Image (cartoon, rainbow, N blue to C red):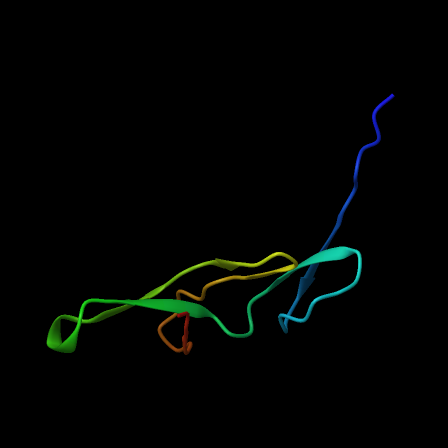
Length: 68
């Protein structure tokens, strides 16, 4: 019989890793920049790491944190 791994999924406000769990958070609201100068766009994006995923915000009044 093969062993299976189970993981705990946690929804949180701040993207802080938790031992034994994958955290989905939205505090930073990541974005990417496409283009340069006057033709530049800042677009919401998802950002997934090994233990934390950060969700985008699509509202008019929310800020965005650039992902490099």
